[in-house]
Length: 428
Image 1: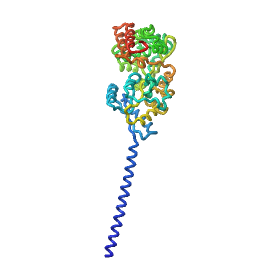
Image 2 (image 1 turned 180 degrees about the horizontal axis):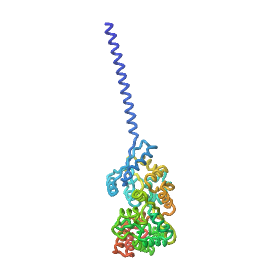
Image 3 (image 1 turned 60 degrees about the vertical axis):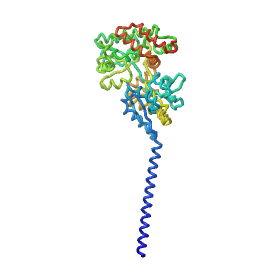
Image 4 (image 1 turned 135 degrees about the vertical axis):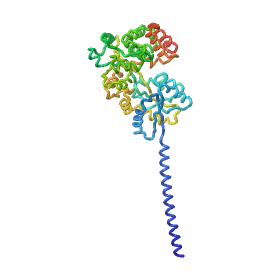
């Protein structure tokens, strides 16, 4: 009986130890599970909507930099095809959904979303003071409410082939007359001076945005138009349209059938000496021909001034229906930091909207400096995307007609003015 009792006691003791161990393990498991759940509950997820499908890998680096300081905010860059972005975004917003962070189209297009109540005001966002007033205007309404953080500037200017200029003994023009003279010299040598086509209408407003300020003295005329002191019936504006017509002889012979890809190829393969286009073309052209040595020059005016036409090409804003506004605000504040600006220029090869951010690429760095000192607004984008059709669209359509010989110079100006007067208050 004693032996039996002893064995019973040992069995009970062993069972108690085992159960205690299991209880301890269960408790440990519960604690571990609780820690994981607590950590998961602290994590916040943000989505970024954009039209830049080609920039996924680049934004992964941006997000990685952000997460060094904010590891608890999971950010996903989820772009939509450029041609579908506006439709997809508008549909989502109208349903009370959409990404937390929205890549906002510049000026009127983006502000329409704000007017509809889809975009959150960010007037009190830390860091906005690092940007110029001109950059902030791209996503600021008439009442002074700020909706977006400007990301990059785009600029348009003349790129030129350094080898061709050197071989032909040509210098970068400092005056309008010098610009015309070098075009004539190139033409006389059998070299296409300007890689430009008229097949795609947007190229025409872009070209006018470059050469127009060379005729009507960019900023002076621009300010007078905004004040309603001058309009598109002005003699200088009509002269800028005449200049557009006169430049056609310097385009490739079949310019009516050439689009963006065609003229880029003309310049990249050194079939044309100059290429009037945007800063975003620098990495594209360089990739097409890594050996191409090309530079840029600002547009010289008849009075001897020089301009580089610029505008904000996108801002990031906050969805008014976001469930994670505080985290979204933290991300927007990150976009105002020097660290982001430097990474953006390095990875995207674009001009930062943040002043003082330089690039290791000499061409882009020089262009950034020129933008800071010689900028004139691309008014067709910054101020004349209103109307139905827009004034910008009317200009493009009428210029196409002019190049085809169907529209006279004065009629181009007349149609543009008539359209602008229907909605642009300073003209009314």
